[in-house]
Length: 125
Image 1 (cartoon, rainbow, N blue to C red):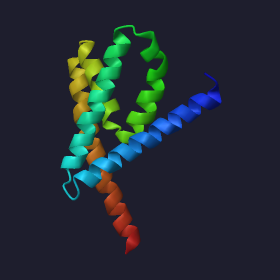
Image 2 (cartoon, rainbow, N blue to C red):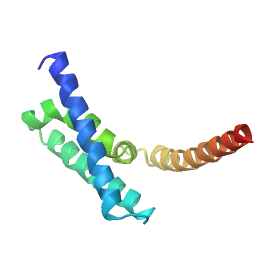
Image 3 (cartoon, helix red, strand yellow):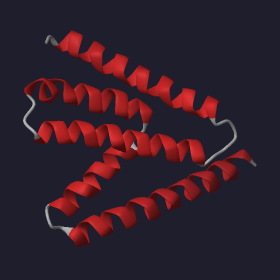
Image 4 (spheres, rainbow, N blue to C red):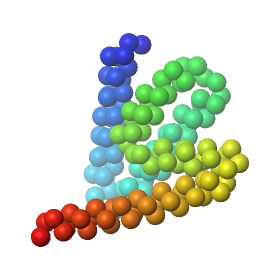
């Protein structure tokens, strides 16, 4: 596949993922964090299906998986990549690293969000 066509497939996948995420928030309006939870779980399921197919050696899936995962799942949710990375560490027997990665990812992301809000509020006054 040419680089231009590959980029177009990636962009289309990202657009479809973003539209799918928005559709879920329309179905579950004002029900945060439930729509986000549903998107994160669904994205993780899609990534798990793709990863499982890759591990099975399916050549068709292996050729298209990077565009599907990066495009669709990236537009849909980045939590699926986080889940795969944590699972991969755990599956490799790196349980301590997996737990550290999960705890640090959640704690540091929340701390960064709080810092961002505080800084933005400071600049807004």
